[in-house]
Length: 607
Ligand code: AGP
Image (cartoon, rainbow, N blue to C red; front, top):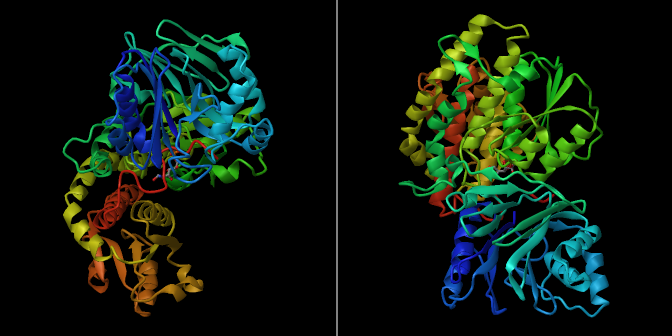
């Protein structure tokens, strides 16, 4: 999505600070970028560039910004209007006095735009954002906060708006609704950002703005209004551990984050499992266990939705609780049957996905039990849920989720084990799973040693135009996540399919150019999957099999990726790592930007 960043203080620093801030936020949306800087003599400069923030930096470096002490900047993920310089933010008002950047969507912008055109306002872009600054100028009454209050009464939609006034360079002002925004306080510097982690190292503390807040920020003062009244927002100290990650020796963040997974799992266990006593510890889950939950609904999007599908497997097979899993965009508009014996779990790496957040608010309004599995402390979904499990994956920069997904799945396994204790526990199996969890980080480290072998196999298939990813039961979910990873990283069409279902029509697609990957570590469904593979091979199709090293069938497949399985409940973690590396190496061999794939954004804060 779009991201906003603002800075006030040192003359000559504004452009540099804004660009550095945008670079720290870039992984979250990156079709184009722009900035506006002003100085105390009411000079203003606006620079825009299509593509990555570095293109903006190259253009900015050609300017003299030595007197400019204040600036706002923006990375855009296009919603209204193509990816062009004219549509880059910031956007100016008719007089050129006011300038705005925006994260969100103004749903009624067309009617507002028509109203302004009839007042002889002209527009230079196709964006909804330009309407906001023109309308602001049209209704400006000399007071920023009262004008913003009138502005928001005219707009419908989601917005994080930050304004500058060319004639008053010491003030940033704006408002937010359903788009994250914080005010940051350095020793003298003042910042605004969509994500406080981009300010770590620059600020002493920060304020998380709430929906509906209208703010004004200067080097000497700040004001926050909510419903016309002064709002007392807590100034929170910074958690240095949340700093946006550095690349280190890795070629990109995605590979770094794949290799961080053994450590991430150790972090996500920490304090929650006593491996010697086989005991589980969580105040949050202790409360959840008292609710008498008979059903669970999981609501999430994309990869987080897939973690919910694996969560369904754990909660049903272990804790004996029926689970529905629904994508946020569908749940939000479907008929609801909220009951007191049901738990609604909202899963989100960013904690800002608008459809998941809106779905959570709907359930809360109907007094449903809500619970979040999130990776970002202080995120909107965590705050709205009020109770959560943190996935503790650390900042995930790669747009294709990897370590956060694995830690989400683990949180579901932890929840299932916890609830199982009160719901027909098979203690022998429980201990076996706990023992296997203890071995999981080392098992993943061993698997990562096969990175080169996986690369060799993956690159053989890098030029295929289509793939089937096949599995059954919970391994169909692995196939779904695998398919998404290949699409979002390599831009290759792929489809996850139940291996048993293929013969009911889709097998017609199979030929020598349409490879299939079978996700099947072993277990009771292996013979069924082997039959499905034979049906494919009988039609000239190639099958690549994710297979246990001891499996005697490996010779019959075009290629295999072998690994040492754990117990069946934990093999999804190993299969996921293989899929991540498979998709990574195919994308890398095709020269894709694996950290910032085209058309994507790290957090989807618009509907
Ligand atoms: C992850 O690989 C995807 N880029 C995307 O589907 C993501 O999982 C989805 O947008 C949900 O994001 P969230 O977990 O931050 O809510």
